Image (cartoon, rainbow, N blue to C red; front, top):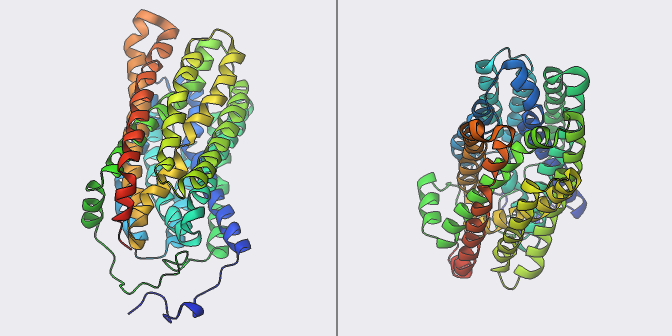
Length: 433
């Protein structure tokens, strides 16, 4: 029995280009809320540190590990559910949960309460991206997929822009608790809007495929397929180490600017909203555009372009950490974000290209498991703990020397992307239909 009834392709639902763009826009809105709620603690962490008397290690747990450990582990079973049931419903429920837990974070009276609330945010956000990636791949054909996924991923940096800008100034005028409540509640309303205006696409719609099998591949079968693809192994660990820098350095930038360059939270929020938000959004879009333009006939360019961009970010990172003029640092942050974010759309598109129709959400979840466990889980925690360790010797500059480790990690990540590109063409040819 086919999944799409009736099996005649002429009778399948017709989604106009306008409606596809609408769905992509609304999904991007979901991702904006995802990253407002995920990253809002970053701009508030100096105020939270003072109010709750926390260490850098505890801040690293709150902004990284406590969130990531539930996010990555629950991502796999939720992604499997998304590969065989309504992805739209999963996203709507998940958005309600993570937004509600963000609002509740503002009521925390100690580290434990805030930790539990962040765990709740992580649980909710586990149901966000893998189902959304899968829906996008069913709405958009292969030659437009990296660009579409990159447009969706721009939500990361629009979310960071809004979170930093609004969170920074709400913190200045009303305090960190009010900032969390004000920015958490709107996501629950958006979940209703999403549920009632977005349709679930038939699987295989973009490829004009009607499935003949209803059974969803098991998690183990998808995992076995992926670990037997050398391109995916190198890609996953390249993404993981790159995210180690993205989240590790990115989550500590507000504290770095406050401690080393003596900037206040409102000023930091404004500058980072512009530099990280606009620079990151442009980089994400650019990666998808360049990937689809040059990789359509030569697939390795989907991964070579990120490899070159990541490598170019190494000298820019040195300037960020060691320049004495804060404006040079702020401009360098924007440039680094362009280079750092080019990887995302092409990476997700290639992960989907390696698997079958009912494996896409799981492929995203496995990729994000590695990416977020190494990057979001370990990055902020590692740099925070190292900063605490170095503080007796370096004082306020301990964070600068802690973050300098990222330069070596950048070079390794670039190498792994290049290695993945070597095996990509052969592995794409072996992908199940």
